[in-house]
Image 1: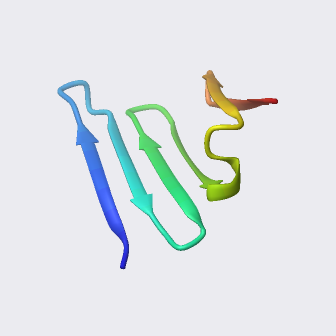
Image 2: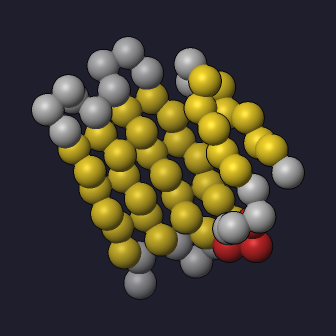
Length: 60
């Protein structure tokens, strides 16, 4: 069974978090950009995800 959380604000930004069998699926949308990625359960808590103008950098 999949569970989801959706966040919206007044600046037309949208974030969706979906818990799946494989990991946490994150979708982000704004007026000018959108992104989607999956964080496997094995990597939760071991990596930091940062956003810089739509480019995701993985730091170990």
